[in-house]
Image (cartoon, rainbow, N blue to C red; front, side, top):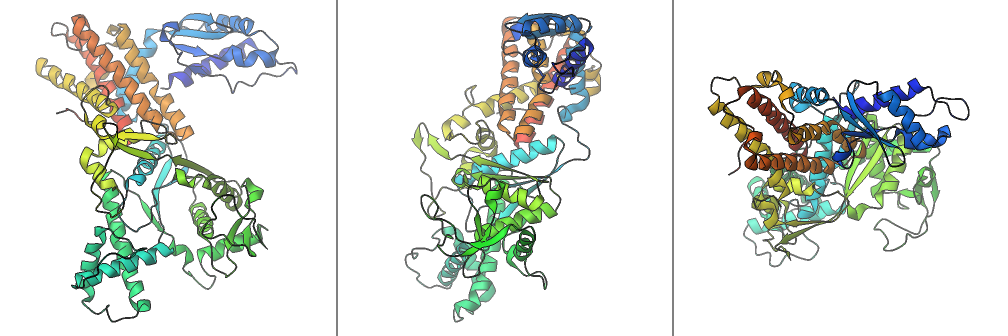
Length: 589
């Protein structure tokens, strides 16, 4: 049950019953009418903007319209109180049975409460991380990995068919650099003194095991071969080893992709018709979206693939981009962007209605070009959404963190996860909007206090489980299961703190819907913190007022109703934490 959608529909039906007409004699557009929770719950349970958004098109004063609407809504038996606030907002209080029904819905649906069933389920592709396979994941990849993974989980919970995808950049010059770096470690494994790692090669120790594996497989046979012979062999094995390393690093963070898509596959000839990039280029030519021309130099630092010569260009500016984009250089080779276009076309041909890219802030210029590609290739049938993740600064007590750098020149993802655990990393990466800078303080995320958001939320779930365990010991003859909870007498829950907790849970479906529509998983983390805060606040009231405690040994019926409330809270907390990819512990040590 979505209380806000339910009462929005009631308000719209009340407006239709009044039979309002605009200046043209038409019924007003009700699409902007909403029911929300008021900012101050002292004013009511719900509030609607109906009079404010409809007064002007109807040629009425907002308060006059509000009075008409209040008179109509007053006939609804589940609305117990109505009040007009300010210029025309309408505050409502609802009957206790509304909250009782919501609590029953939570217990009935379990962790599925708040999910949105869509039929057919829209197909969504979420591509995230997509780091070059040249070494272990570093700290700069963490936020995009967590945001992308949580966003995919959120969209799936909201009723979409979601594919989590990683784009392997295995076709560029960096891969040859990787292979040469691995070959150097191969020579080292054979006993050769390689000295200092030459500039331009990857210096990290993570390539030493690759060298050892090359030695085991090939012995000394590669040493005497020409580079043109050993480079392809070493390249394949180095890429494979790096992908294994990347998968391990991501798994430590709780991230698993269903598809690893190779950039090289876009360049490889599939048949007599050529490669996927060739196929893409032919399609754009058929649409008249490709021409030969030159581009003005971009502002700032020139990109690596820019040249002041005639090239094969895509009419990206026809679709909202700032400039047209080069697909093929003057020497006939394809640009990096050409592979991006062919990659999108592959996604479109796989039937995705929505394609999401989660990128680092250093790629902020990519949004318009990717959206232009989406419009051109799909004729607007597939929506392209780009989300950027700002940088993360690692801190310890306010000072920048210095850690061991086995990678050679950066702090690894694994070092961060190994020190504090996956749960604090994931939750804190989502406890701020993705496009806002983030300071990650190692001390703060591991302390057990209310100032640590992840501990505060997880402790809320553990506290619920503790109450249920204690009740099971005290009421050994009472079957404390979800079926028994669903049959509890919810009318006994009449304290303001208990009703606030139910009202907070009632917000969950709306939070899920809004977070999915805006592609903002941080809203889930914010909500969980608010729900946990309400729980802890009510718990603390029970310390001072014993009659409010969840367990009353002298009143089994009241205890059962309160335990049903506790169980419902635990379900919503666990459901939200699952979306974030964070564990819901049953006890905290």
